[in-house]
Image 1 (cartoon, one colour):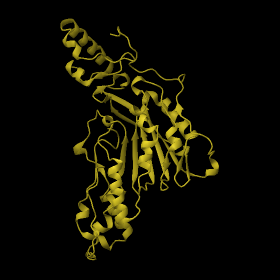
Image 2 (image 1 turned 180 degrees about the vertical axis):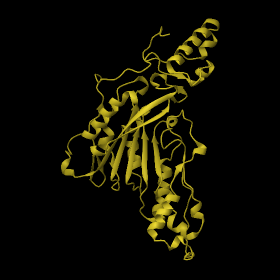
Image 3 (image 1 turned 90 degrees about the vertical axis):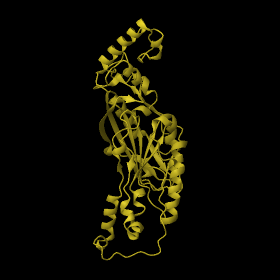
Image 4 (image 1 turned 135 degrees about the vertical axis):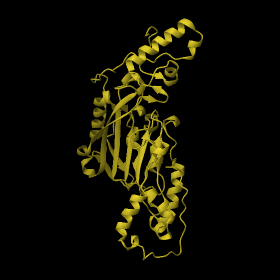
Length: 361
């Protein structure tokens, strides 16, 4: 969502539109029609590159809302002007700048909230989704900055922790999440549901399942009004999706299941408002870590993890080339360059490996 430009006028009069079949319908039916027409969708004419950190199901392109309906007449506008905001999914990226497509900032969102509160009064803010890297999430202050915005009344919030958001995913480190933020954040009193998407590649699904189960068993969350949200394990859901192995202009061949593709495993845990008597409020919410002795399958291609796209293009290696063959061809290309032109070869990188090894190729 971009910074809002709609500033609803205060209409003092409009035609009642009694001649219109639309306005002969009950208000509840009109609301359903308006909500459908004013819901956001992915604008695939401006699709993101498949090789970004943020391209994923539901986020293959910027979200857009068609607002032509609001320009048909004053009465439609008066009844439905707030719906593009109320029925949208608003996304915040608590990440480094190269991990986000350019998102709505809390400052811009606060201006929108203040305007709506002034014109319409308290309004639910639709569904909120937060993407967060661990180094931003774990202190808790940046997430609380979002949750504590004035006039912010969401009912549902989802935190999505992507494969590349976890600590040292590049090095195949066991999954871990610090618990400091869990202890410190406070949700608005309007929130009745909080979800966390725990995601990693398919090879590491055992780690994802472990972390998600530990979170459901040991984490609960506070609202500002003192209510507690606890996990509903019966609502835990598992989903799968396939994305590009190119992330940040680097092809991650280590875990490719098909040429230039990675398979993902996602576990979604849901927390809802619960009876405080069922919660040990004195219990600190722990940090979570997959044990080092956990049974973790080896990568399909442990001898090489990633190669820059520019180097692959220079070597003439197609994205359709399987990972193992890509590694062989690339190393052969490096040998050839070093044999015939040692000075120029310094422009190109060696394939990155799991361990430092001067004789790895």
